Image: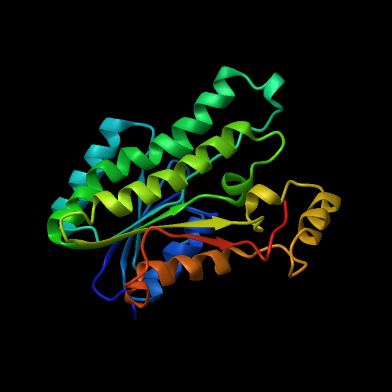
Length: 239
């Protein structure tokens, strides 16, 4: 029960990576709030659902206020929510660019601007931001996604400095997953999945549970001396 007594917020928590994190954190004793715009795809003891569009600044503040009123604190934040709108740069529309930046980058800021300072004020907390191997190395046809996920890495390093600058034990880290078998990849043709798998040292794609386990480590006391880091969980991906 590594998270006993902790209050955790996980965005994009209704399914996929976020859903795995919510369920794992709850098993480890946390009270988890799964934040998502879509409906929950599972039920788990210790996990409650809050419908929220993280691009809505006022909605994020209302959510934050409601959690503080109910639980008095937030110990853990995982900024996991994200979307893709892929196209070559010459074909990418303003709408495709804007929505990915708004969700995948600004959405992190909208919640963390409230939760991070709360952690700093109470003297402790752990934030994990989910970036991507694409944010580290770039990828053809994903200029918007690559820019957003690279920005997530920059935010991670900045917040690690900001929220601990007065001595608070607030840790901020980042996970950069490789290609992982979530619903997003289930629509990808098998020949492409095989190609992605062949680009890894381990010769396979990742599983959501493997990313969730990495997140659990980073938010637990086992990682009490780890902050400002990017943990690549990609099977040895070579782009």
